[in-house]
Length: 441
Ligand code: DOR
Image 1: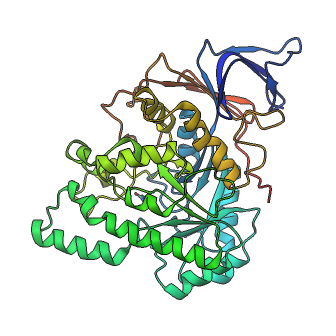
Image 2 (image 1 turned 90 degrees about the vertical axis):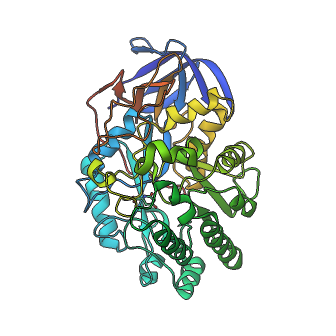
Image 3 (image 1 turned 135 degrees about the horizontal axis):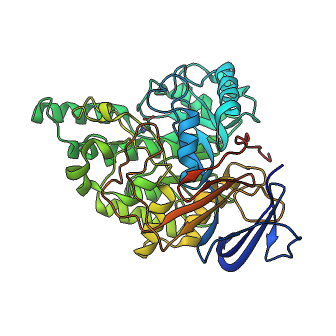
């Protein structure tokens, strides 16, 4: 049974409002905000810090099975707890790829044995697994992942008939990685002509260009409109793509969009100092794109903020441009980074909570999570705005962070997963493993 707890003296950010007071947790569930407290319930004094529903990260790569030297379900889910992420949805580009029913079941059994936080998995599309997509067990998969552009792992789906079959036949929301691979190949050849093998990292956003993103995102949106598909376009990076998405409340949208923390926080001026450490797909683009993405979060053209946590080792990242893999470890610093943007007035904390907790819960029909509501699972995080995060304290297995050397002026103080206090003041506390997310659909 979960330890009961009164989280007192908090600034509770939930459902668009900030309320000062206490949250009572009984038997792993939220009993209420500012309700009467039974005798003997121990108190955690939040001392005026923020209390948020834990982040539900709808895009992570935890590398298991197949790439355990980069990260495992155990190591990365632990790093997630230290960042206030209490549930994650994990991607299929492992080895073996999560593109068969057996591979999906295998991931569930690994997570049941090792995941510190709550978990769900995407089922991956290939050019030839349409029957498996149509018959996937919808209680075991949060969605169908389609790489409409090649990235880490060999999962490109580029056959138009296959895409039409997937968009017309998927039983679940389709989440797409959109970058047009032929455009990228032409751009890379041009960069090779110009620089030889010594391509500077700053060329990444010219190679994985705005045009490549737009071409692929607009194809995904066109297919979704043609077939009435429930489409979620992952990690937008350009102002131009935003014209493909509608502003406003998410619930009636057939087509939704996600942005990632690093595309909100960095722009191409960071390539000079960070190089491979911010090489990711789609690429980090211009300051103008970054500002447009921040505004699109605020006006609800973008529905969800995620991490695309994608660890690679220090040695892999030390290679030159073409050899260094794309992807950044982010789960540990995502929330404090977003709160850094609230300090600068670019986002509000209420919007951060909406896009990191409420919206992913609703989009994927996650049962009883994502809000501080009576009866919901007590997945909670206390974040202190009067303390700082040292990005050198790293829990991801890869041991590095793109935020090193950057001031992060908030600190995760405590994280509860299913009512268990699992992280407090820099220390992990023992407790039960996470649970498989359940879906109300
Ligand atoms: O930068 C990225 N890294 N983008 C992706 O789409 C995949 C990811 C990875 O798995 O490394």
